[in-house]
Amino acid sequence: MESLEILKKNYLLHCKTQKELNEKTLKAYRIDLTQFIDFVSEFETPLSKESLTSYLASLHAQYQPKTTKRKIASLKAFFHYLEYEELLEQNPLNKIHLSYREPKRLPKTIPASTIQLFLNTVYHTSQQTASPCQKKSALRDIAVIELLFATGMRISELCNLKIPDLDMENFSVLIWGKGAKERMIQISHPEVISAVSSYINAFQKEIIASGWLFVNRLGNRLSEQSVRFMINKYVKRAGITMHITPHMFRHSFATLLLEADVDIRYIQNMLGHSSITTTELYTSVSMRKQKAILTQKHPRNTMEVKRTPRAAQPAPSNALQRQP
Picture 1 (cartoon, rainbow, N blue to C red):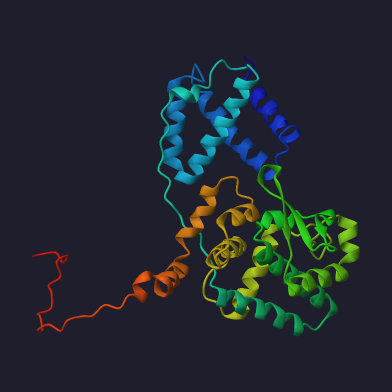
Picture 2 (spheres, rainbow, N blue to C red):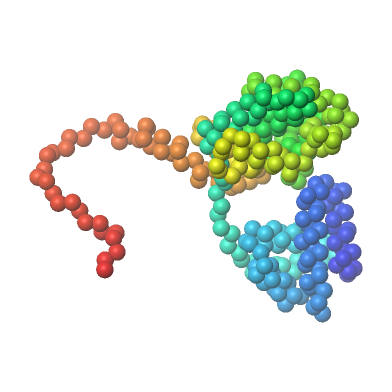
C-alpha cells in the first residue's frame, strides 16, 4: 500500500473533483487527516488497532465531543474511500468500538419582537446615512439581513451566492448547501424583494465585475466575518443585550415556522437538512406553541365538572421536599 500521505492527497483530490466538496469541507478533511497521519506515523504499524485506539483516546482527551465526532467522521470517510478503491482490505475502524456522548445542544433563537426591533434599527440607520457611500452600504446590509431571515440559509451559503443563483423574475434563490446539495427557496415578502432589488440596482457594476451577489466596498466577495461585524453593529445600535449571530436567524426562521404550524418536512427541505432528526431539534425549543395549544385546545376546556363543596382541608405537605 502507498504511503498514507500520498493516499491522503489522492483522497482530497477525489473529494474536490468527484464529490465536488467546497473548500471549507476540504480544509477540514485536510487538517483532520494530517493530524491523524502525524500521530500514527510514530507507530511501527500505523493502522493497527493499538495505533488507532491511541489516536481516538487522544481526540477524546483534547477536544469537545462535537469536534471529536467530526474528526472521526473524516477518518471513517477516508477509510471507506480506501476500502472502495481496494487499497485497503478492511476498514480498521470496524474492529474498534466507538463511543462518545455528545451533549444535546438546543438551537439558540431570537425572539420575534427582537428581530422586529433589529430590522427597524437597520432600516432607520439607512434613512439617517449622510454620504452616498454610506447609503449604498446600508442598502447592502438591509438586503443581507432580510435574505438571511427570509430564507433561513446559512451565512456561508449567502456569501457564496452568485448572480445566476438569484431569479428576480420568479423571486427565488438557488442555494448550494453542504455536499454541493442544491435547494430552491422562494422570496415571498414584498419588502424583502424590494430590499434585494434596491441593493442590486446600487451595486450593479460591482456585482457584474466580481460575479458574486454580495460584495464588499472593494468589490470582492462579502466575507462571513463581515456579516458578523455588520450584525454586531446593528445589535449595539438597537440596544439589544443578547448576543446574536448570523446562524441564529436560521434557527429563528425554523422555529417560528414550526410555531406557525408549518409541517416539519417542509422546514427540513427549506433548511437543506438531509435527515429529519436534525430538524426535529427545533421541536424542543418550540414550547410557546405547545403551551398555547394545551391552553386553548385541550379537551378539558370543554368539560363542565361540578365540584361538591367540602370542608376546608389542611394544606398538603410537600412530599418531594427532602426530609432533614
